[in-house]
Image (cartoon, rainbow, N blue to C red; front, side, top):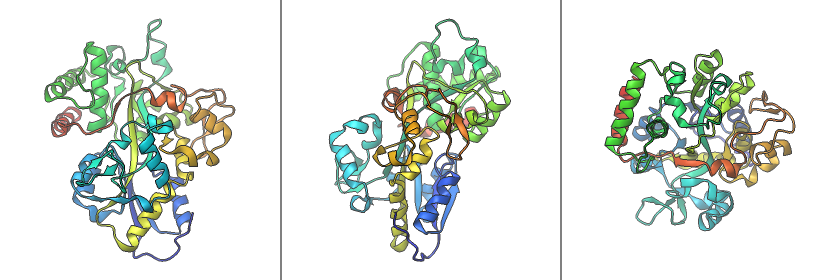
Length: 390
């Protein structure tokens, strides 16, 4: 990676969630690029208001399922594909939709800037975002729950609303992710189905929230979490027996000696992708620095680092040289760990012999029932979700 040791007017400003801009990455990228970088870690949904209303306050944004909103708001700028090191890989994957491109869901749906300026799937020379990572999430539970299951009972999102665990369940505070997971749980509990679980109607949203409010009044839920560290703490204390959880949270629990079990629910998982965007206000030397940051992420080291907490690179070809064979076998091929494996911080989180729940990369991604997205009725979702968790 080329070292950009020349001076820039000010530090590059990067906004991201704590699961992506972890300490090893923050330290390594500044060393590799020779750039001063200011990282701002924001884990709650308020980051969207900041990005939309103040694009001059950042240069690079690690975005999650928000491209519809931020593109429409014109707070990010098109990414010139000829300035991206893996341009050929992106074009090939978009055209062929084969290999790893088959298991990354909606990432191509709004990847390219169309002739009319809208985001879409027809390949072009400009991107709305740079794909970086993807994965599937579900929920985590402790062995104490497993011990109380009925013979042959399969994992289900319905566990989150099951009265057997009343007072020991927690949901995520984010309205986009929380609403999808609540819909999956309600569907399993009520024995019904929604027309499009990733894009609910107002009536469906109201029915789900009413159910959640009823459960909350009975003391079913613990307080919701915004940062996965908070989710880890309550489960480590034993206050929560089942809750929504990101892969880094499960890795942290195991590193702390908590035998967390990542569910593979029979209804399917919630798929996601994380991407990089450049502020509409970035220009000149700061724009050059932003492109350097984007290309550094595609070099392989960063994606290998976050792979050790359970995330997958959108284009994994570059990361294999940065993972030990035993790490690749465990995280990507779904094989039992040939030795104890460490998390991004060097702490053992995977014991020898453990096999990741859900299997290989392809098997796990094939379990995606629904992908993170903003619903057409997002304003109603956000309003009712805030009322519920408040």
